Length: 144
Image (cartoon, rainbow, N blue to C red):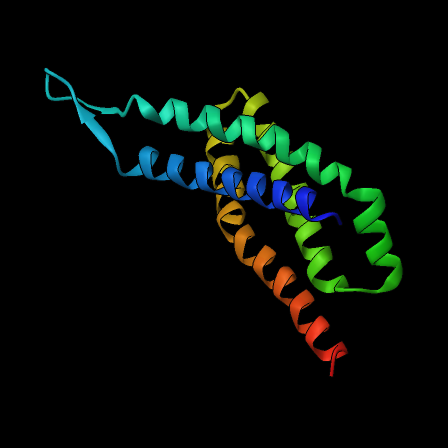
C-alpha cells in the first residue's frame, strides 16, 4: 500500500476510534447540572457523536478501497490471515451495528446494540495493533 494512503487510513481509523472513545466519556461520565439541579448530557456529547459518524463514513469508504489490493491479495498470499480475518470481522460488525444504532427505533434494542457496538469498538484498536505488529514481526523474520 502506498505510504500516503496508509497514513490516511491509519489517521482516519484512529480518529474514528478516538471520537467514539471521547463520546463514551462524555456520555457516561461528563454531565451538566442545570439551574433546577437536574443531571443533563453535556452539550459537546452530540458533537463528538457527529464527528464519530463523519470519520466512520470515511473509514468505511477507505476500508472498502482496501478490498482489492490489500485484503484479497493478502488473503491469497496467506499473509496474516488470523489477524486480518479478525480485523475484517470486527470492522464488518462495527459497520452493521453502527447502521443499526442509526436506524433502530426501539430504546431497548438501541441500548443493547450500543453495548454491542462500543465494546468491540474499543477493542478494535488492539486488534489493529496486533495485525500491524504481526507485519513487523514477519518482516523481521524474513530479513534474518
